[in-house]
Image (cartoon, rainbow, N blue to C red):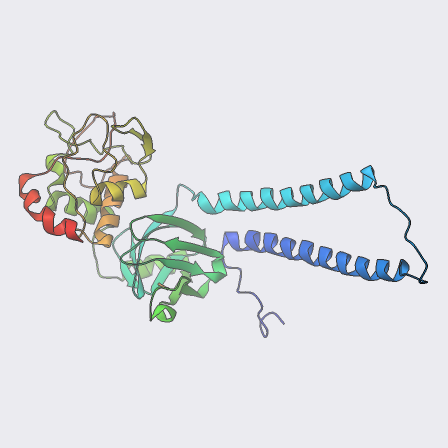
Amino acid sequence: MKETFPLFPHQASTLAGRVDGLYFYLIAVSVFFTLLIAFSILYFAIKYRRRSESELPRGVEGSLKLEIAWSVIPLLIALSFFFWGASIFFAINRPPDDAIEISVVGKQWMWKFQHSDGQREINELHVPIGRPVRLTMASEDVIHSFFVPAFRIKRDVLPGRVATMWFEATRKGRYHLFCAEYCGTKHSGMIGWLEVMDPVDFQAWLAGGTGSESLASAGAKLFAQHACNTCHRPDSLARGPNLEGLFGTKVTLQDGRTVVADETYIRESIVMPNTKVVAGFQPIMPTFQGLISEEGLLQLVAYVKSLSKTAPVQPPVRSDLGAVNALTPGPPSQRERVQPSAVKE
Ligand code: CUA
């Protein structure tokens, strides 16, 4: 029955069953009260119908017991929605630490993926079964929304921000991947497939790709190419904060605020460096808006992240400095000439 007349997509991720459970509970509660109210209306309309022209209804004083009951019971039911929903919300928003990293860039009208070891794909994403996968997502142009119905996951991908999402596939197969936010004339064509494979097949598939470099080492290359390391360095010549061990820590800004150095913050510090200047540094970093592609930004983010792990990927600057500030470097002088054209956009 389920196969011939599928009302629901397959449950193909660890989250799918939990999301469906809550969904069915909401439906069950709605159906129960719809029927309860409908039948009560019918029953009371018949039982207390007016039997003669002269009949007057009896005055009703109210009942404390009844009023408490119809306040407390709905409150408890509503709270059950809240706690159940919150627990799933937390599960969806807390990727496990051992998740595989994949970067996703949405653009009119395609999804571009890059695995952490560099393998690229378009409108098709291969993942292993039984391993958590974390997606770091950005948009090159407008708002898109990454949606895999079989996994019960959907997340908007906004320009200028980095969104994250995770899943763990539990069932092999090919599943639809959609853009779920109207993004222009070919929005309906912004679709693809997510293929869940055995870990062994996945490794073979990864190995069969064109040997490109990993996200983090591509980021390290960009870092050196744009001469970021001339300012972001651990020694006394540093005009920008040292980036080692930065990711995920709290950063104090010039104006006294603190922010967490997450993906969005690091991306913002590259394209709009003067929005959040780290305490103790001058706002001298030029913007890299338009100079580095969205994919390049995600590679840089992956690189900065890799500096927080025990084995950094090709660090351009050696450091054993534990104290951490954040991004907001000074400019190499040749960068300043490029700036005006870059800012226009
Ligand atoms: Cu992208 Cu709709």
